[in-house]
Length: 373
Ligand SMILES: Cc1ncc(COP(=O)(O)O)c(C=O)c1O
Image (cartoon, rainbow, N blue to C red; front, side):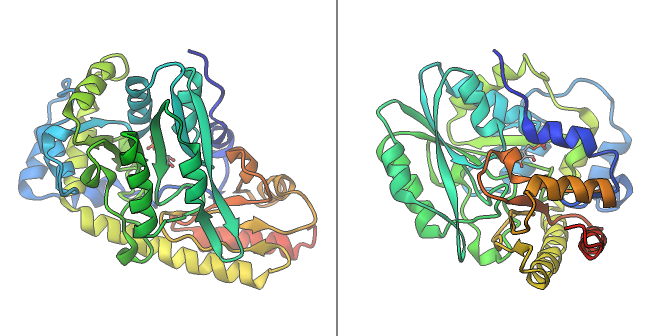
């Protein structure tokens, strides 16, 4: 299998550990080991202190799978497979798809959500999230017209990376109804779930409401623990998960033993950690909006409804790539241009999850005041 470079990851690889400010990171301010351990119950602290660094159960630690299942309504531990989030996308696509299958994938998107299917020889139709005056929207008629008799899979991602778009409950129901009518599986990337800026807008997890739905989630974004490299697939279809588990024998076999125990501690405190991330995101979204409104000749804010990212517009005379490069070179602030997501127009991604967000914005403001742009 040959696969093109993952543009976003290659971009991060160049700068992530060199620059002072990451204004486009999608994760929320990471917890430290001591902050996380301070949340442990005596029983889970004992799991940590007495941990033997052996191989672990391939499907995931039973307590971890139980804690994951508690995030859902219709899912038991047996309907959860633990894997790193990116690994879980890879395994699921390998397991679900054959050359010649047709796949509909939301766009722009985290590249692996469509690229693995393409590299497997599937025909991928992208379903665009559209920018309008009032923010982001989806066209359900376009989705309906995209299905063919060979459509095996619909790939969605809400809250959406990179726009922060969240459909309404009625739109979400309509999307699932279109898939259900055709017996089409839905792969739902829910990495940013529980970060709805208005929690009343939270959508159900697809695995809870659709028998052919697969939910992907993990600890990297909402739960502020990307370094644990822990995620999972949750689905009512256990036979599918068993095939994924067999495929995992060719990737990592099992997850890291320390990560699993730390993951159990995190999910036993899921509400508290998610609330911490949401506080940071909401505050930074307010700062970003005010910043764009202070510089209307340069930026248009397109308000996100969920997740830790936004995808505003650059209105300056130079290209958005020139803006991103200059702010990187002159202020040490990394901003990802929309072209990395193969999206037209002068968008750029803003990450709203970091504690030094105000400082990073201050650097961009200083850059603008410098008068180069
Ligand atoms: C939408 C989406 N899905 C999956 C992932 C993969 O998560 P991880 O990097 O923890 O493997 C990311 C990471 O940025 C993401 O934004």
